[in-house]
Length: 250
Ligand SMILES: [Zn+2]
Image (cartoon, rainbow, N blue to C red; front, side):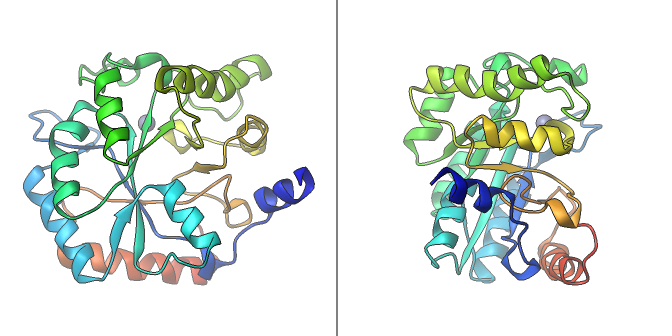
């Protein structure tokens, strides 16, 4: 079983098997947003409507990958929110509920209920009750490291704490297993991917990934921002498929 599991983890996906996963950070109106983290609630609802017109319903990545293994992922798109901002529960959750969608939110295990100080920011992050509300609505809670540091090049002990430690502490807080990981800043190397697999995660989300690494330990995602209206969002999806097919970076 372990051998089969390892083979499943290490085998790169063929381009046509790469699932479509969208990457958000928060849904909110921010006065100062230098890292373009926020999509406004108005725009977000329009993007969900666009997905619906395309015949797509948003689900968490764990759900999407399980459906894919069962051959039932047609019509599903993965939706993710990185960092765990408070806007997710306030603005994204009610909109997603209206459209019958769920998502995965990747939270920083040692910053629950705090602020995004890794960017020198002061944006409020989800607290314990917020996470319980999301889990209760069928959302998946995944780990985004312990402190939001880039994983590539980290020493063994720190890498283990960021990957295994964050999983253990989050699972204890949620009283539920944590199956999904997301590399902070999309930063990963072979050691980081191996650490994620060794920690027992079922998958990990990247941003761009080298073609040979794309698979359950490096699920590529498409950034979606405030500028993505219906046309741009639809076009991005088509371009993404074309880029994967041409063997380029995701
Ligand atoms: Zn992040």
